[in-house]
Image (tube, rainbow, N blue to C red; front, side):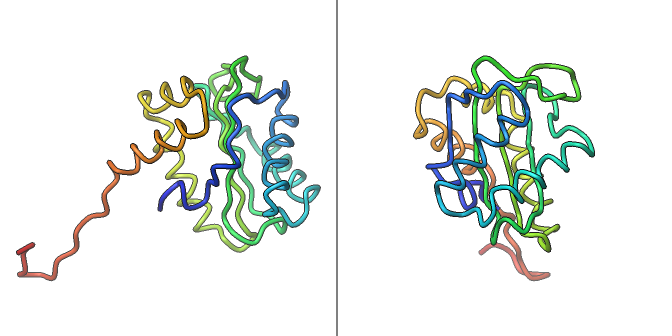
Length: 166
């Protein structure tokens, strides 16, 4: 699974202005609304806030991955934001959050959502890539960082028993 298959370059904001968890979620959802991939803005925001009530998606190390399965979308989509100031997102480590990766999937797509969460988490847990994201000055730099990381993720080669690669 490639992050750039569900994150559109137009849904990246390197200057998140929001000061609260709900405002960040609304700001990220608004990017997706403008892109035309959200069927119902209110339903989508409500589902994300309900998920936050179950437990914060602020995972620590300055990262939050708000996510939800919702009637508000037809396919797996994402929005990405960076707040230079940081936002109190009730993160597990109590620290401010600077990097936000919002994920949305249709209601019946639990497996797809889990794969996307794992993929995004794997990307953001790497300190090198987090630093590059925080230092990015434009969307192209974010996309380049994601592409750089994705080149390191190679699918395993599959061989039939008894056969080798040549």
